[in-house]
Length: 508
Image (cartoon, rainbow, N blue to C red; front, side, top):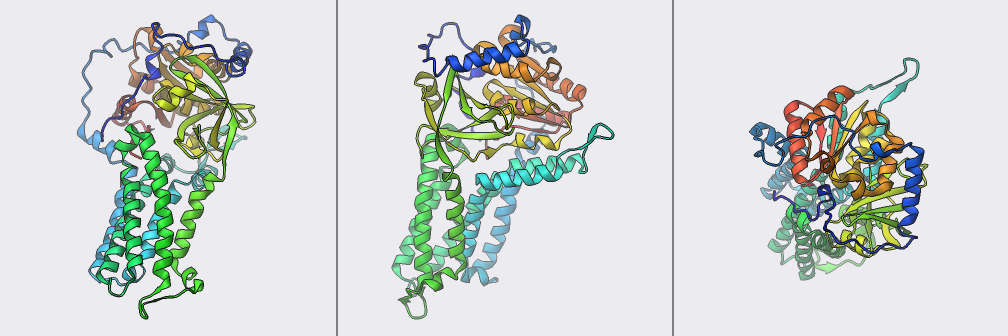
């Protein structure tokens, strides 16, 4: 897996030599800052707190010069062979066995109903990426296994063991493995289907074979565009091809299904009776695929946004209404093009606003700083992230660096049992008074460690911070949001120390 590239990482702080941006209109900037000052005043912030230097750990004196720490190969393999890859291998192996039996004519059912195997896999692949289905899964797990309050003993109890709850979090975080496995398997079954048609082309109509080939090409391009290297380094190209070629594939799939089910192989003639078509399995699989694809798009809305630009590297977006913790928003300047995901910061579902931290890492985020819009497009149905399972644990540690705070802060704002570790440079100047005000209003000093590497002269010994907090806080799990290098370092350190941890995914 290639290492993703990062541009102008906000974790590096704001350089004094940067040219100041033009002052934003009052409606876009000052409104948020005025309210942030109010938040700060309510929380009793003083100059000492404003330095955002609350951690007591010593900085790592050799952090900038020490060679990369060598990690046991077994540790690296265990992290590489995560639940995502386990899901992927299981799904592909299961389908591979069925395909082998069908190809050897040992199992005839898939040869007669190959379309059902094609579309069944593709439908499940789409389902795994559906926002509504994901939210329902998270809600089911949280409602069933979250901590229960025992008021008589004034403590929280869990009726499921920790290993089970960790397994639930891991499974939910790595649903992408099922998505990729089913998509790959569906594509291979599609090749098998077209191959069978080609072998029996004398009994099939040419139109069916042509649509089969077109569908194969569309699905192949959609899958190739979703490879991690393409997705992480060429996001816009990934989204255009995966989405629009995927829609072409859906349309060609419908034509392929209708033509294939309408052509009578015995009489070599077309049967215009629609009843025959809707009685086939593949028709209903195609119908379900279409519904799952359309559901999120029915929730797309253009909404008002206020933007604060505290520094040239970060834009703080403010939207109306509060949100649950652990959710992810997708926003765009267009209704159908180039949606970008950001973690949601909110004080709770009854709050007046929620916020996004957008670090300048590409054309889209740079435009938010240089040409801040007054409205953006978003899906009102939000995607659930791994932090959404934080209620499963008695206590936890939320580690983040730079703009990773956007995905982490809500958990600590809404749940008093979570400890925040935030590492960044020149934090208050870079991220502004809005974020600072939210932190100091809701999180007491004993529940956070804010490390300003510019004020402290360097990065900390991150694993010492994590280990000390994990032990003293009595945590059960650590959630990590960082860049590629930071995530790798902390995940490896936690694995070596035997600390359950979930980090940012780069291969989903």
